[in-house]
Image 1 (cartoon, rainbow, N blue to C red):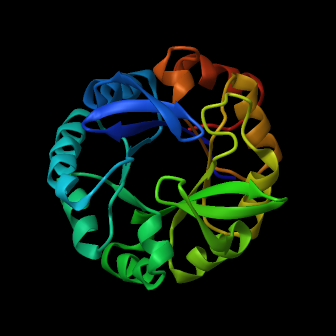
Image 2: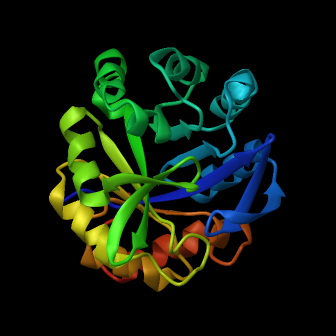
Length: 250
């Protein structure tokens, strides 16, 4: 059985860490490098950095930040945002990222997944899937959650696995930032229909939410932002609590 991972997420906008609710209403919550170091010191298993407004012009800026973070931390970290090609992925890997996250670019061009896996290995390719309930059907959204695609979520996750993705970062847009708990239904469905690790994201508000997602789905990681950024839950107390609940963690 895979040990469960606790993964803080840093959403980056203009070089700062931000957080919103349902992908809007962004607040500045601090310096990404300082937060990264803090979470490593607290015992985070991995970190995820998402440049949520990335454009090609910002790629150089993001690379500089990745280099700073890589020099500061000693745990795996994933970088995403604006990675549209093998060349873009090379920039963040060469800067020190262990993995990269892709979303809109591979939805627009699914063969890119195989190209990335061939170049870097599947273990480096994380496909971020932003999902939302549309009239009772889970649909995939891209462009920071602004554009609904034709893909149903279950079909898309099977497709990305088939094309060589090594991991899925599944964010429930309905849950994002609400602190109402992970969306167990869609997380369970996705984690049971693919054979690659699934990170649950969107809605963590209390320690019991992590117990619920790890007990009732096959998700191997729980990702959160608000509760860690605002000091509502510390990683050490969360890990202690999970151990008490007999959840096997890293």
